[in-house]
Image (tube, rainbow, N blue to C red; front, side, top):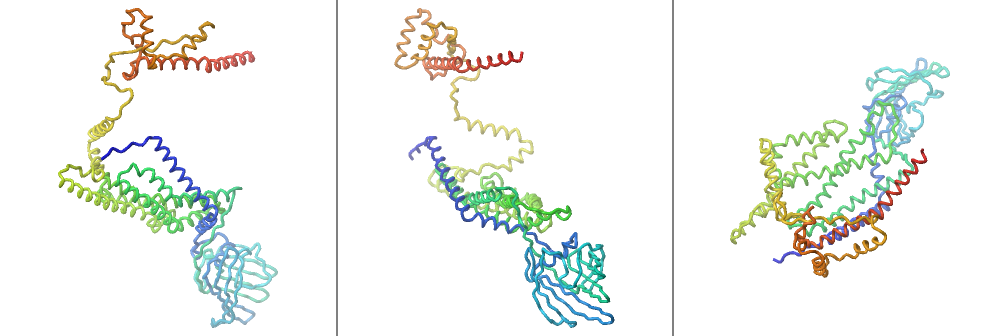
Length: 593
């Protein structure tokens, strides 16, 4: 098999740059499409989550004005009252039934049915009840009464529909007195009595059924550019999600040439799995967890604090994105557990013996994620964590078994051919037993573990060589030492007639060049006495050893050039700057004096 040709590092950088450009281009295209066509629809879709589920029959209200409006907000709610009119010795009885047909934020449509004393229908009519107008009884049509400034007390009364704790409102206007009892829980008008000039009208609740309803929260915009920034952020998040397959495909194309076949198969499975699991987590948060969490969070301690709630669109969307993206990442647990089992870091038996701890962690996570704290909500939020871990263990067991079977088959085939193979190498590496190592470590095997770890580091570092490595042991002196060339004279110390010659010599020095090495050596030998020429050529440079592969003349030439350039920089650049600073400091000190 021919040796594979190595690719230069610059080619890798070019390929990386190319894949990044294509990835960013895909994100930009997805962002443009989402911003142009789908951003508004996504925001409206997410606003549907901002609802409060209210059970009118179980909620207790702080004021009669709020309580009396609540029965009209739930479609399907109905109640029946008995109307008794007394004039002197005569008395007439009739019944009225009310049913909420349609409810909205500003008002509701009711069906009012008049019944006789035998509860037979007489007349049916649809009426409109405004939720923006002051509260009033829908079954009382009494003239000449104004609801402002009634005397308010609390009283518990019993009627045919049951026993209720009520707000009692007592109002007297123009000789007419009206008494109204409104239930604190549910908000129904339990009883109403009006007396005027010897005539008495009484309405009493006979039976009722209040349905729960959903209240759509009205979100507000606080900042000037909040709608624009929200649209941009929603478009960016959606673009990242939609462009994920394209970005991962580009990443795979970059790393695939350097992967083995089994590694490529792993990435071909892992990349789609990440996408599917992320969407599963986001869908679980949107359709299961958020309908439980959002109403609780939006209404938590609102009545206890006595505050008016105003919710910002940007902050609400931030909460939605945090929960959905967070659960999307939590659902990646199987892709973490499965490789741990596949590569032998942990075993399925480890997770089986620690299953009670997995269950405990899942319950804790469920309690953190579920804000209501109810057992049902905790189970709904924590159960996916437990099943995701178990699913990862099951997936890792199947993966490891299939890899071992394929490796065993390949090993038997190689043995039949008379070849010696390593089954673990064929399996892609299953030699690490982290669980056993941890047990030995806890039983006092820390020293042995550290020694094996350091031995592995040393073994892996054998092929790493530094340019300063040589064939000499530590502490042994090299046979030849050289000395750095003495510093050249400062230009400030030279006379004017010597300055040009020195600078010219430094700039045009050709020592160490191949074509002039011989000529330099001959010239040097001619100028030096015989004793000096026979002496050690390195005796003037005892400060540091030269690399044995560097020619002496070349090294001397490099030293000359470096020294000359440093001195030139000091004299021409740094020293004038320091002189100006010193001059300025002296001038300022003189001004202060």
